[in-house]
Image 1 (cartoon, rainbow, N blue to C red):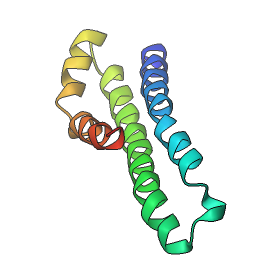
Image 2: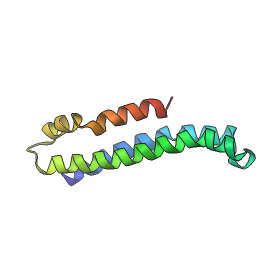
Image 3: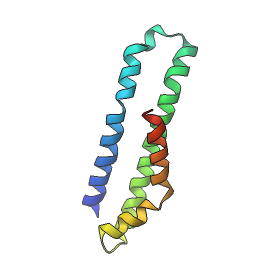
Image 4: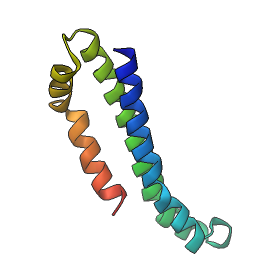
Length: 100
């Protein structure tokens, strides 16, 4: 169960950090040192809020996945149960708007 949880966590965070290229592109176009405070908050605020929400959701999802894996007979049935959790759907929703 621990190995599968670690693999799932690695996959979640690899996807998250590959999506973080948006932040690098925004950083290059709008350097924070050259923006007024109001523009800085309006440009970087939604990105930071979305990334923070995704990290929190992914941590909750990994913890719930691990608890399902510990009580499950095999990883396939645990994955099917984990897919019905709200965390999975929230992650898809947040990922859609985070990379847009």
